[in-house]
Length: 337
Image (cartoon, rainbow, N blue to C red):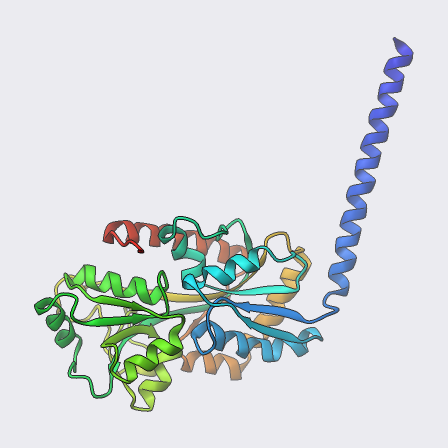
């Protein structure tokens, strides 16, 4: 009996030591891989078509982040289902630092409450790297539209339910939710026309094929400035500094729209399990770029309110957004076909 206990102690000690050495080896290998990273091009997956807000920011960052990391960053557009298709692809990628994802309020806060199954968990499948910032949406119509004010548009919709059409970048996107919330709050009914991205949607608004759209100043701003679009309102509680002549939707005298606020946001994510040193380096190098006077002014001009959140703070912010939009979707009884 004494000899058996001694043997068991030795065996247990051997297993413990073996487990410790194995764990140490894994940690050492992970540290070594992180220290040498990157040694090949990085894939920047954008879950929307080219030309939209997420794509614009991806190209703005990647152009400077690649040289800062000593590698090339390849933009890969995988649009569909309000960002869900590309996000699911990214969630299945190896967690080695060679796949980064442009996430949005749609793909990482809204879709989980709209779709019965999106193929990934917005919190458990990814680790946040940074929050680019928040961006309200603008309600825009074609320059030659008969609707001169928000009141014109809402009253027309109330007179003829579902006659007015509103475009969005796709089902479940922040543009779609903003449209649904606008209709719910103002007791109006619109016909929603989903597109595969902002770019083709806003082209049809400019041509008059669709009556209006709610999209970020990142996308709509240049067309407003060129005179191709007319902005009737912005979804922030305060007017945008660079578009101060555009009234907020909340300040309108229309019943139900007091306090109306919709904020889009853009963030950078990596697959869960990506080594922390890689996440921290991505965060540090990206923030250096975003805080340069040139890029900071560019973001400001695009109507983006920049953020300096840490990855941990982004996680808390994202959880709050998921809860917020789940409540909005339930209250407005929004359902996707």
